[in-house]
Length: 489
Image 1: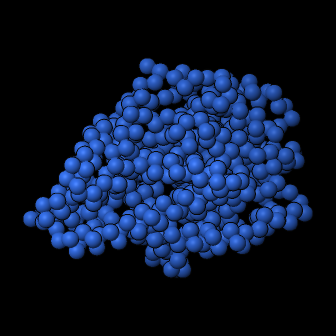
Image 2 (image 1 turned 180 degrees about the horizontal axis):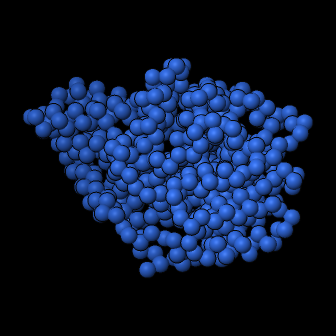
């Protein structure tokens, strides 16, 4: 009986966290709807005089995308004498030669090539060292897989009309959304963040985050907030919280788009997910207590807590899914009263709210609802399924972040497949070492597949939809991981 109590306790603990998380998401959805009604695309007043701007391009071994990046930033519409472009290159391969050759094609552009012989501080270290030499009053940042809008600076700078504004963030769009199932599902997830979450937080004055790229900072804001730190894997989230805790205001503009590439293989997705989830947990450990003790509005504290700890949802999903097996077995044998089983259905509200958030974000900006409905019918359940299938991998990252275990910054491999110049398997940056958790994902797929079979056989459908999604999710994650770690061998 003690084991049963433990399993039920873990199940209800996990489901309670999921419900709280979903309520926070629902509140953001409410404010997103308000923002939609209040939102105006009327451009800000053009400044009387344009300021000097530094564009920083942090690069590390980017053979496949660095030329495209340089071509795009060279086309930025801005007075040449007021623009400098820093290429912060930490590369250890032929990327260095590619960059030096490419910038020769643009003698009229003020390119500053800064090459480091070590990766001290990784991306944060490169940005920090570049800032020491930057002449610009404003600092725009683009990662190597981005293709900036030529009018990016003309569109964002007017929003710095108030001296209190420290950063303006644009919305990521996706160059290769339709490349594969995995890129479609990533776009599905990111659109919810860039529409519902960023707009929902910004509308009510809660803290938002600089997304690491596709944004522009006031240089004095970076310096006043303590510059770039490298003690977390998400230096962007860390600086965002330090700046807003000091009173700087951030502006999010969804109509300003920054196209970028999505990782097309599971090994690259996992690399990115690990860094984002672990870095988020590290920032939670670093900032949550301080935000709670400082003089901020209750809504700011509430959404900061939900924001900083949102990656913990993966631990909650993992605990809930594993403990649900014991709960199902106990319910089948009549060890749990029907009243408690029926009462637990209230937790399903959480999944409904989460699904609604992603459903609405999917339809935002679509020209026709009828055509979009066909896409969401299969993308929503598949997205939820694969998200659950990543719970084990991401839970490890979150646990390491919360407990202070350090690991190096592993950047996400870039591909530029839409150019047609390279095949997926020939990418030299692909990761080939398959983590042990991948094998457990395969085991979990079999376990939850077995639970689906038992549910049908016993006629007890209590967790059938949940276990079906888990079986499918872990199965897809295992198969795509196994394939991607073997590419190019």
